[in-house]
Length: 467
Image 1 (cartoon, rainbow, N blue to C red):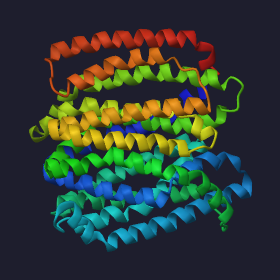
Image 2 (image 1 turned 60 degrees about the vertical axis):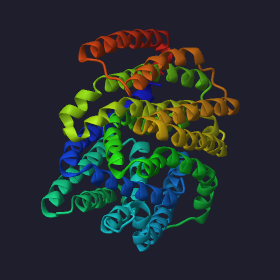
Image 3 (image 1 turned 90 degrees about the vertical axis):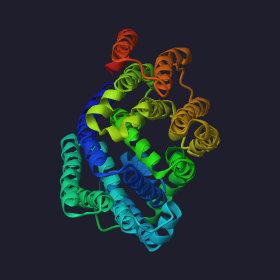
Image 4 (image 1 turned 135 degrees about the vertical axis):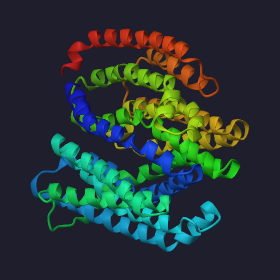
């Protein structure tokens, strides 16, 4: 577990800096983009994300699963084969989306106003997928310093390109998506310097076939995850307006602060999981991670919820003041993904990844039904409630299925107790925001609760944590 904390802090430093720098984009977006334009940018990114899922075929998961299984020449062949296959498929999918750009725009916006912006957004997809594999390698090779440098390159280049294009391009939407494209190209050119020692002139169909056998059963799950995350946009644009997506999108950007923790944890978790799963005391190690993670993560969610009004006030414009109500609930939605990863061990270690698909299938049904009902009655609040309900169901399903495949004796009641304050506060703040004094008192009481419990758990499991 000591390695998990070490990797979490190492990679967490880079991702924390990245997310903090990305916060600079919030005032940029809120000042340069209207709510309709921000909604359009969000929908364009949804299209690019959909294309990325099709192109990757979850091979990045297989890449992580088998990366440590090879050495020397075989390892280089495995890496090169994945880059070639994903690169070719990504290019073909991007080309297909560009060819049908007009039809996609008419479907999303009922006009072709954003057709050029869509082409820029889709064109970055092959470079984005390339960087995904490269950053996985940096993590598994434990190149912490290089990982930090490349993350910094990605963010700084995006900031510079954004300012440059907003200055010289009148169309703000095109300026934003074109800057994202250029930043991704710059990052990939930098990553090639790292990759030069890991590639070779070889391609293995067998390696790709093996990876596809592992990854393809997870594709429906990834599609389900995509539906859970992005289907609400289509409900918002059809039942409300494009500007509603803009408000919701800004709330997501603030709530993504919790993704600092999520991203850092995921980067540390996968190598830790497969590096410790064969140890005799593996179940004891994994059992204690859930409560240790629950206290600080739920405390962060509560903190973000309590100060959501101030976040929007100081980092945005009055036009987007409404977005403060949704930040806490969306933070809770994101944090549940961390716990889902912790408990979802069984399907991965037993290589029965089809069970991940089953969990997501149930969550998609819950998501669509709850969106239809709640969005009609509560608008954007209904979307947020639907997201919380969906990830709660996904977490519970993953816990049940994983424990049947690979039993870990988690303390269910303890986790429920830790979760309650975060759920109560996030849901109340959707509809009512107390004065700052009351909010500070609430946060103080919750902080004492979580800190005391974390200290007790840490003391009880000190020997395991040091391992």
